[in-house]
Image (cartoon, rainbow, N blue to C red):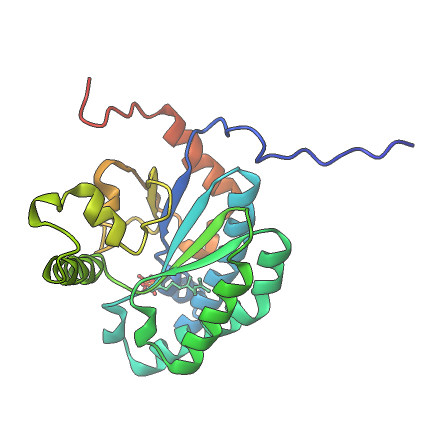
Length: 246
Ligand code: FPP
């Protein structure tokens, strides 16, 4: 019997038309509370949702999925929760990097991750290097990320280039700023999703969201999955994007 080739869902431009989706993964704590579980159980369930959604992103033909895992403001949480989150991230990278690699996924980190524990920085750099030559979608994880901090770091680099005479002040435009952001080589952001019913951006991708469509759902992050992502992309497909035009 002739073997049936698995359809390559990424071969043609996907019908939803989105290239880059970003998600503010919110509601792990409330998910755990509803079940009388400790908050860390919500974060653990959140990692399972990350796995499902990352696989679905690939099946749905996205070029990039960016996930807000730890903000530059999350340091204000109790030390035990920060440590739980860092432990989960470490374990996730260690255990999932080979599956990413086998699927051709490129792992990227945005945010000031170099300020994290040196052993975690080493692990992240190794994982990014391992998948750097892959040609499949990018899974970008925002770690120690804040959009204002990202813009400050970009402004500092631009000021340094001006001081060195590499860039003239009048040449600082949108492209020059884009090029210094952590997302410089990622596709433009099309859709920004936030789970758990909150309707704010919480210092996430403020520059990149300039013309992104926003999608808010009451679903708590651990309940979000490939079907929910497909639903968000269906809603995106129905939006009329005008980019300031008519
Ligand atoms: C928000 O829920 C979620 C976070 C601050 C962390 C998100 C982290 C994960 C999903 C796990 C690690 C990620 C990866 C990529 C392995 P919350 O705690 O603010 O929930 P609440 O508002 O209901 O309390």
